[in-house]
Image (cartoon, rainbow, N blue to C red; front, side):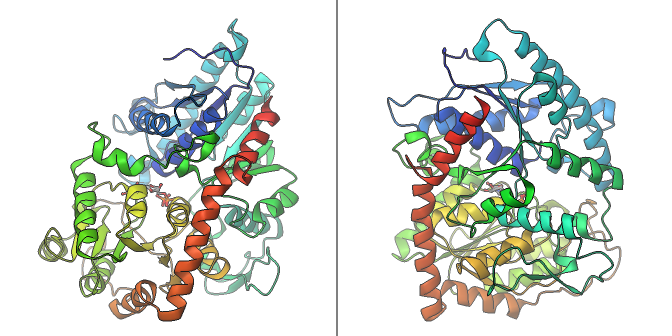
Length: 522
Ligand code: UDP
């Protein structure tokens, strides 16, 4: 633990919802606040603290020499797995081995909340004023955080992991309920932005809580909604120039302070006046710690080789987030499209250990990649560094908001294959609002398999894939070439990359919103 320097700025307590894709941006938000001079304590379950430390160290390395430096304390508190009936060390939602255990994870997180409350009381009682919490920033399912903030008499911000447009759509759906009583195929109007943009989604494309099949208990949904309605402010990983005033519209719709402070993946570079580029690319090559694995090094070496072979940005990067997996028959159709591409493909596959043997063998034979065109990586890839690599010219994405924003920040156009959650809403931003994407034309959620069954959970004969190889191929051809339209998409992507960087530079919109957040808490 480090001691804080005496500092007049408010002390933020950041408590991420323990799921990898939320921890990453929330730690980055913490780093940005700290780079603006505010002391920060990040509270995390023990097994997440390595992830937290590696990102804090990365941000520190990216700060310009002579800048204020990063005053962050990382506090690990016990996460009661055994008490809640979870396997030992199962301290992140994406590490839960089966959907049946998700309620247990929520129970463990509620008990974790009690430990956080005790710790915050201790901090409040400290004789050192600068260590007393001034503001809590809580992940979306840490509903207990609001009670803690009220008890301490400090404001509470929520971080959902969604972009501002998706949050605005959810607010509209929650308030006006146009989806109720509609069938899964019926189109729902979500008119949150002015015409001519047509904002219609089939009900099946809406986030889980708006589907009749939603497995989250009614009482939990109510608790989540009450939490988001009770908080003082919403912090978003986005920047004001990106989502057509969605953040301002969300503020008007909710009556809350909404602050877009991103793109947070630049936390080691533009934020807080740091003058250097994001350190992620250099880190992957230079780091010796276990956060950078052999797969990561292999990806970067492969990309370097592809860049040496071709001066253009010829590589297609394919990844579906921290946990996105598809049924085996769908994976095969995608695989057939990828190996028939005329450009090199770097493909990250999650859940490969549960694939049926024939699909696994096909992958082994066709995606060795080291001397060929398609390299499949079965573990954790260094996504931000990959997207920043000059060899990469396109990204086939599931439209998770973190991935979307990282692609925008790197200036890489996207082909969109939304899986679930708010990803169909994000697709609308990428393709319809920003004009930097090509839709694969997926109409239904892509259901992953969380059972761990070797036959893909289907039991017998495999179903037909929803999205055929030719359909995928058409979208990828347009993304990577696309003639005049393709060039227009690349130009827009480059323009947005510049805007993303400016937003975090001194005086930029996100820079100013970080300052506002600090003033709000002061
Ligand atoms: N990510 C990564 N390597 C991987 C897979 C994912 O670094 O192999 C990171 C990615 O950069 C992003 C996050 O995990 O920051 C995924 O978040 P997103 O919102 O895109 O999707 P989710 O995982 O929530 O579906």
